[in-house]
Image 1 (cartoon, helix red, strand yellow):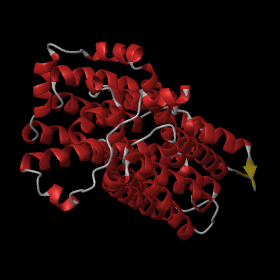
Image 2 (tube, rainbow, N blue to C red):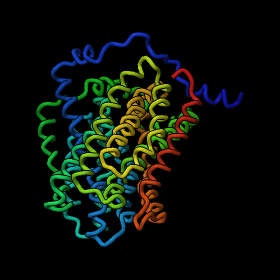
Image 3 (spheres, rainbow, N blue to C red):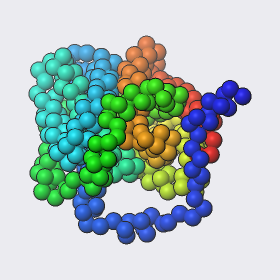
Image 4 (cartoon, rainbow, N blue to C red):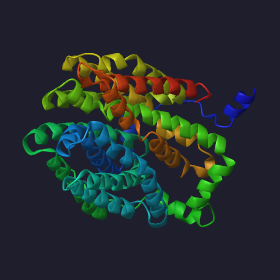
Length: 415
């Protein structure tokens, strides 16, 4: 009975509607200004995701250049994820005071500059510092862009991964890993486009008036910690495990293909492109399906099939078969994540919906920040045929986390 009372605290009573407009009907409602905002914000998050995933592709090359092990270089991924909540807090406070537009411009300029600086890093210590600061920019950009685009913004993450794979194939074999970082600084051009073409968010302008007689951001955080702590810890635990799934499955995968399977850059690129096409499709269809199937049912279904297809994701040695497995796994992971923005919004306390989703998301990222480093360490410990067994650790961490998510979601009702 006690467990039942606990779950009732964060149940959503919003049942899925019986009818759902087609995606084409909804697209027809978008005006010109909204279209420009959509494209620019999506490109901004895509560029940051591109810069993040370039680390996962170049990790073995950086390790060789700095005379380190891949698990040592994976520390840079950990620091990027650790500093994302700080960026979310800083740019979140700035956005509430100055609007979405100008903080987003500063954030893009910062991320592009730090990407350029990473390419010039003379040693690993400087490289880690630039990546940690890049994590601040990345954390800030998710909150700013998501405030403009909501759920569909997540698809920029997969698109950035896909473009990183293309850049990896086209650049790294001819010019080295540093040039890929120089390319990642090009999106600074978006700052000019935003300044002239993107208006300030109308929602922020309305909220600015209301906030004069309402919560400040820090007051909202204190309210979450005191009045809504049960709901907060439930959402935080869910987001932590979900981040273990997405980062555990993706961040070390290019290293697994390169180091353990000795695939060529061309083969790795083909697998990554096919996988991320699945990711884009999965996020898009789940965003539509969950409106009539329900949030919880959609997430459980997609995450269950993620675990089922993990053997096809890491066991085959033919790159075409691996590509098929990666397509399915990425589709399922994105299918689960495609529901997250609206799900977090629905279980948030009504008076805290501006802060709660972003806070638990970024803190979940922080707690799962070590996923790639954990996999790299144990992969190098559990050697197979003279190579690190990254495939085994990827499957174990992702599979266990998927199982935990199914258990967590069974504690909620009517979602």
